[in-house]
Image 1 (tube, rainbow, N blue to C red):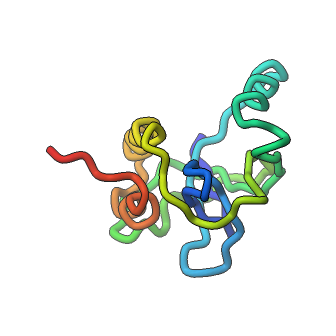
Image 2 (tube, helix red, strand yellow; image 1 turned 135 degrees about the vertical axis):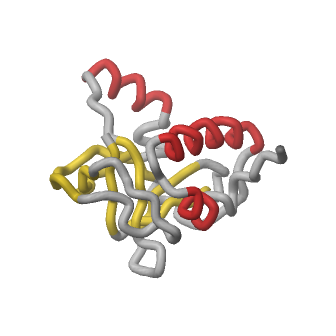
Length: 138
């Protein structure tokens, strides 16, 4: 499911990996996907994300969206269908921007391809994520 998280922004932090931080500025929305996790899935994710030493878990309000409508500026990506609370892994200690880890770029490119396939406008990716993830040369 496609979601919107308000009053947050996506960054690469000083550890060189993705983080979602509070934001009241010009870019105060993050788009993503919502998944259903079993307890076993969450336990695996806890280990993978380094919980509780690296990432913590927050329950954040999210809006489920209809499939996004392409726009020129990344706004109005879809109609809000439902609001709910979702588990989000965040690093509350390392909220400053940093440089992306080289090994992380490939994983981010796969995530970007999925996002574009689901209708997130390229302009949104370019403006907010492209700063850290180099565009592949054709």
